[in-house]
Image (cartoon, rainbow, N blue to C red):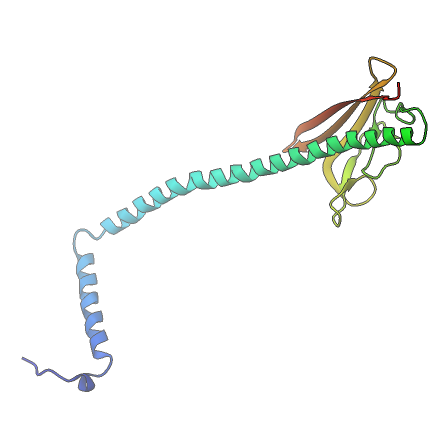
Length: 193
């Protein structure tokens, strides 16, 4: 039997070498046995199980991102369509305040008009141009900003009586090459009659 050495005599690395020596011998014994390939099979099975669990998660995350983009576009289009109707209402109200007939300047849009949030009149157009988004204010308009996927067309036709106008505000855009649209219809009346 070897005499026991004190910790000062063994030095600080003696214990580590001894532990490392034991773990190395266990490590070598394990790979010398017949079960050496079993860890590779375990690793492959765990990778298959992990990928089986992660693939649906990634698909779900991708679909959620795509759906949120569709919802965002539909919400923007709905608001732009509603804004178009509100602008026409404001123009009708301005006619009343000016003492003019309620439909002054509104009857030129049977084929389509363009309008922006700060418009004081409607602009007849033959083709609908894409709206531009001002990056500093976030507002959509036709003069400055970057092109957006949205186009808005306002059509105004006479209603059932001479005191009624039917306003349609249609916003169109494309999602993944599929055309989409939102239409808001509003009936304007001459309240003075």
